[in-house]
Each structure stands twice: as C-alpha cells, then as structure tokens.
Amino acid sequence: MADVHRLTVRLASATFTLLQQFCKERECTMSDACEAATLAYLTPRPDGMPSEALGARVEDLHQKVDALLRLVETLVPTPQQEPERPPIASYDDLYPPGGATPALPDVQAADALPALPPPRGWRRWFLKEV
Image (cartoon, rainbow, N blue to C red; front, side, top):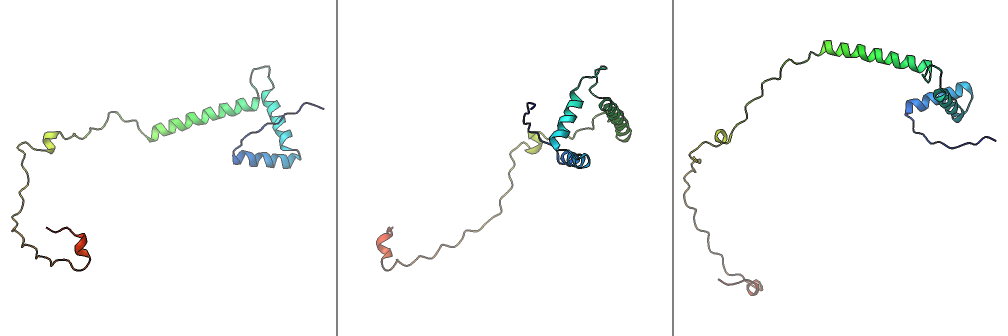
C-alpha cells in the first residue's frame, strides 16, 4: 500500500462548494480530487509553466486589470495640485492681547439664612456645638 499522509487545508466557502460539486459530478472523494489537482499543478512542464491553462488565466487577469486601471484613470482625473489648506489660527488670534476678560453682571448680596433651632433628641449628642 502506498504511503499516505494527512493534509489539513483551509478553503474559502466558494472554493469548498466548487470542490463538492466537482466530486459529485465525477463521483470521487475530495482527497482524490485534491491529490489529482496538486499533481497536475506541481508536475514540471518542458516549457517551465506549471499548466497551460494557468498561464492563460494569469495573462487574461493581467489584461483585465490593465483595462480596469485605464478606465479608472479616465473616470477619476489625477489632481494637478493640492487644494489650498485653511490657515491655522495662532495663539494671538485665539486670545487677543490685553487680557480682556468678560465683565461680570452686578449681583446684590443675598439675604442671610435663618438660624436653625438646636437639634432635639439623640442628635445633639453627635453634633458639634459651635
């Protein structure tokens, strides 16, 4: 029997769903499909590319990304110069010299509080007499 090793991988939900569908269509196990895909990817080719389909896909992705970049550059013009920044207030602008403080309103003196009667009962033992 061939030497078999366990491999634990993490897959995105979409990739896992595609793998399940592939295995149902081909009536094979997930481990067999993963092993076949790994062998196909890692087997060296004479031209140096792991797979012709992979090379074509990468080239297609490069073309699409270049087209997207050209489209974005036409939609969003690059700024020619930075916009003028608002001035930052200095200490003298915030606090004028001279130390001018706002005038307080005139207030009349309040009436004196009425005197309280002496405490009754046990409270007088715990209060300090003045």
